[in-house]
Length: 123
Length: 109
Image (cartoon, rainbow over all chains, first blue to last red):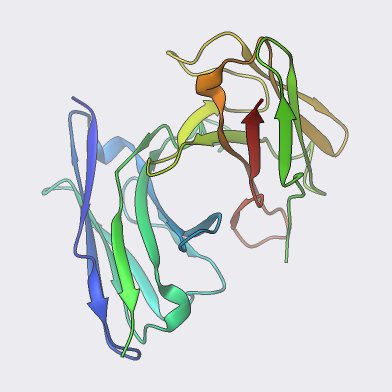
């Protein structure tokens, strides 16, 4: 079935690095953009980053720009989120979600989500 | 920074209609998307491109747009509709950014 599975979360000290993975199955992965969205404990959704279907375009939220890097390996059906110089405010559940765009560049919405992986930044 | 404004909570009796508004300067230039999230679960897309319903989403969920405000309507609310609902859109300032509203907690009385 169509599925996204996140992994790589855990407890990390402030200033250190962590790499999250998002593994896709059940659909043609290389046709879809992938987004990362996070949710701090008890808080709302916050968009983090997006990578285009072929990896040629990436965009980031101001809160993570310069610290996080999104990448993908279409041969392995995976997207990665490299998190450097993490801060306490990066503590959250991290979700990956697939997205697709029409010919005018408008999104069809994030229609498939993973169950998330938890990142805790603490000394 | 671009913001989407939603009410923090809406209460509704079973069988009644719930309406959740979302205001943003990018509307109607940009589309709105609505997500439902139940406790401990991942979000689910319930409306895309302002008014379109993904397959598998009940017909009681509908979306509309008027000027700088979009609205998610749940007609004939059921107990299972109790959840947080988030609107989402894209900043049009020139830099690509997706933005979520703060979320609206729908309580079924």
